[in-house]
Amino acid sequence: MEDKNIQINLFIKQLNKSNALGYNRQYLASNVDYSFKMLDRAYEVTPKILAKLKTAIESNKCEDPSCYMENQQLKYLLEAPAKSIDFLTNIGSQLVITEDSYYDVNQNYAFAVAHSILTGKPTFAKSDGYNVSLHLNINGSQEIVFEGPMLEKPFVINSEALDTLLNSGTNIVAETPDINGDMLRLLSDVGVMAGNSTNPETGELTPQAKIAEEFVLKNSDGSIDYEIIDIGNGKGRNILKYDLDKIERKITPFINAEVAGILDSEQEAVAAWNMYISKGTSEEEDDQMVQDANAFGSSWSYETDLPLSQDKKVLFMKKYKEYFMKNYLVQFTTNQLPSVQADAAVFDMAEMKKAKAQKFIDDNNLN
Image (tube, rainbow, N blue to C red):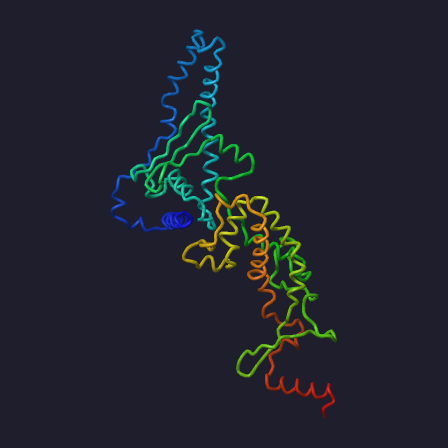
């Protein structure tokens, strides 16, 4: 089922983003019909039912002397139109998540199909074999039913079930957290950047942002322990080396707090795992992937992995930190030039080696 969800969700995403149908003469000539008339059909018999109930109550011809059942049904019908509007609004707010750029395509493809039907996407019309209907239940709840070629069976959502979930803070469609935004913010918060690295007005990192000097590796005499790199043509230069273990110890409490916040909504944690964290790819790599699902083959299931077990929570925290280190912190610890201008200058590799050899001789009194 995982593979099918990915395949169909990706197909729908590509179909809805493509302009190909604009050049399809057969589609342009087709008689497209989106007249589902969902509300009209749902309420077409209610005037007669309302009249019948009012007559029964006024003439005292109810099922029992109190007319409880008739009054209850009358109440449900009078409240139904407003409830339908709220119901459809709630459904729309959930299904629209399927259009997000980083929507987790491991989710049930019925969400994307339903959204395409409701919003009149090409090839999801009544004339294409699709249908959506609204039903008023005797207990006052309502149901919306989606049907069509891509759905193996009707996809049904009940208003009371949806309200209960939304009121408890549970969505039916998981929204993928803004991992990129969260991690850029973390860079400012984790306490490893130099004091002037953040714009005080926006809180964003400045172009001059760098790791604080306390994390730069030094020699026993207090001098900076540079790494020397060969830049070709016999030339070299110094770059800074960092105490990555010290940096990791510093950022870990901040990462733990961030992950704890994500895990407050476990369905969003699953989306983040599937779309970013599992494989450790970067946002740029995700954009370049043929299929926008980097956890293919190792994804977590919303149906079987929720609630998340403790071992999965621990794994999520470990991989989240690795993702942060690899994709966000690494740019500040790689090929960083010294702040001392003289140390940042390009030098001749042969002369440098000769000088180092002479220093070794001098330090060890080998003359």
